[in-house]
Image 1 (spheres, rainbow, N blue to C red):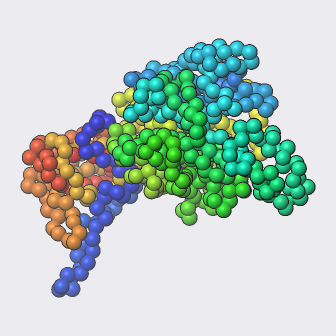
Image 2: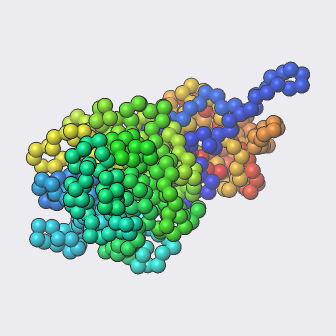
Image 3: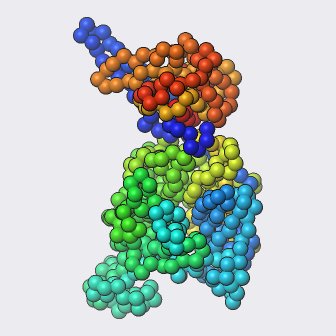
Amino acid sequence: MSQTTPGLTPFLDWYDIWAGLAGVNENGETWLQDPPVGVHLSVQSARRSQIFLRAEKPWEQGGLHYPLILQEEGRYRLWYWSTGAAKGAFRLHGYAESDDGFHWQRPELGLVEYEGSKANNLVFRYEDFELNSVFIDPNADPEERYKAISPRTIFFRDGVIDPDIGWTEFRELAAQTDAATDPTKNTMDAVKEKFNVWRDNVVMGAVSADGLRWRILDEPLVNVGGTPLDTHNIAAYEPETGEYVAYLRGFPEELQHNFRGRRAVRKVAGKQFGNWSAPRYVLMADPQDRCDDDIYTSAYCRYPGVPGLHLMFPAVYHRLDSELDVQLAVSRDGWNWSRPARKPVIGRDAEDGEYGMVTAGPNLVPLNEREWGLPYACTYMRHDRAPKEEGPCRDVFRWAIWERDRLVALEAPVEGQVTTIGRLCCGDQLRLNFKTLRAGWIKAEIVTPPTEPISPVEAIEGFSLAEADALSGDELDQVATWNGKSDLSRLRGRKVAVRFHMARAKLFSFAI
């Protein structure tokens, strides 16, 4: 199916599946109305690609982290974090580009000096702007078409931002308080009480005409208070709501002074690029997770080609193993999130064993006509107390690859049946993305939509189960037929439902 197929519905959760009804009639007879039977959601693990970027430059020998990719007019653009090899080296932010997603060039931008030279592909130094996220604003003037965000710690004196105070000056003030000698005293509270100085964490913004040369905005986009914003914070524009949004690192508020609290993802939003709402937590570990799990990063992005579908590929931090792998989360509005399974969709496997940590970054983009890719970073180090590896940096970037629209399957391991909720017929054919095992098949009938209160669900003439042709094989875009005919033009604009009958099959998406 093309990415502009009308009415495309991928199976990511139970949203598009009719849940069924049950009851007892006036004669005491029980009845069921189209319950789903014999099916479940099956999250699909990605295929690991070959390495597409290694640490090659001197400013990359301390580590490669957090890839972020935009695809524009067939070209792939990559922003990423790196670190020099020297002990205590500051983080840097580099840029590369590619025509195919696998062969990359690092253009000499002449923007940032590294060891006395600007002949490099660096966009920012960490201390100037910690480039977390880049997105394209479709409503902006050309000189502000690209937007980016960065976390920053700011210090206040007497309620006003004091640009002369940084961490060095704050520590000097802290040394003059009781907290310097009394471990029971909170340093932040002590400095605030004696000097009326405190710190907050804010999100800063920047705008650019080309994504390389940036103007940093003066005012913070949002102040999130004392909770830290380390790791990968992602911003985006939501065309459905007309809002600018950001998905930020967070900790539960009661743990804001305890940086080892359980990590989570929170969201801010607003009609402007700035003046955002207070953060609201949208994804965190829940009772279905291991008790030692944190949600480490979000890797928020949009589902390609389907308005209103939001994805996260959160890195899940397993504390006791000191490892990170990547799961899948889904949302219909960007606020309420679910995970269809608690299993990695991007694992830690490597050619010579396994990585200690993998973290994904936006965006999910086409690699070719059949496959989608999501960039992810791989490091052999574990999260906690891991000694730095000796020798050249072995951090790499890879693609996590899925066949198009195949993130999650509606699977019938033996035989099953399911009916969709009602929807308008937008096209002239019913097109399916599916895969069957040996002796497996799928048949589709088009029926009147199920409703509540109860009403009969009946096959529409010409599209019944008896007339449906069985489909089998491995097809990304197969047209369903009934007695060899596929034309749905007489149903266009009518609200219908599809009842799928399946055996030993996975159904990934359909379009009608």
